[in-house]
Length: 296
Image (cartoon, rainbow, N blue to C red; front, side):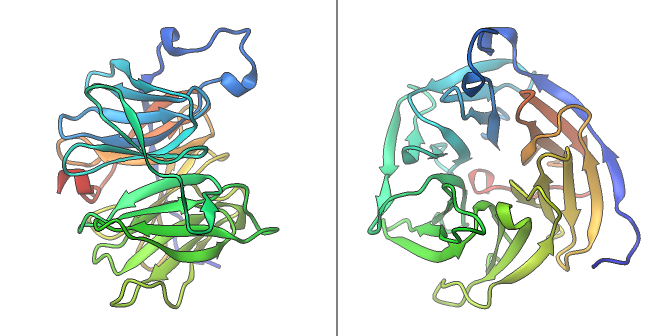
């Protein structure tokens, strides 16, 4: 229970809305309606995001112009870019994929582990040494707490760090990268995952407890504050490293605020995916976001 001062409210505005030419026709079933996720910037300032239901990766220019970087038979959910500009996708149906932004070709990196095919990978992030961490959520939850968090090393080794998470979703490191924060959606919580010198998870605990519905995408700012999306409520929270709510960012549009990325020349603009209404919202933040692996 928190008894401190209420968080400061930060307002948003719409940066870009999906153009009509990229929307399905009105006769299409609900399963084919746009649903955006996974925002990440390249070094040229283009914002990439995925469309789960349409099997697309969009590229949005700094002037808010949209084009399709890739379209394939899959369900892309998360996206991150490495230092070489390669685009990695967490696809719920196909596993970890890699996209060549120039050709639009998508190839498989990982389909599963020694246990078999993944349950349904969700989000991913690079460590500063190039290792790729990702969550395998599937349909896990409090009834089936078997979601996993994996590390795929630059040497090609796949390690399961946790296999008891009820719906692991977004993830982000602290500044020292000795702790990993994991959004646990169906437990309405964010877990703090300390890692020992060997890189194994240890003494995992609760960072913040939210109310239903649970958290989705995460980010970190330069002060080490943890930024947490709260879909269904149209909110993004900024918590201090001690778990104190500092800011509450309110959507000016839809309620499905699922994921976030810091951008702009000073990295003080927070880009927020308004998934169901297919908007990208922006908010000016008091602290710059931590530079991603692609820009470090």
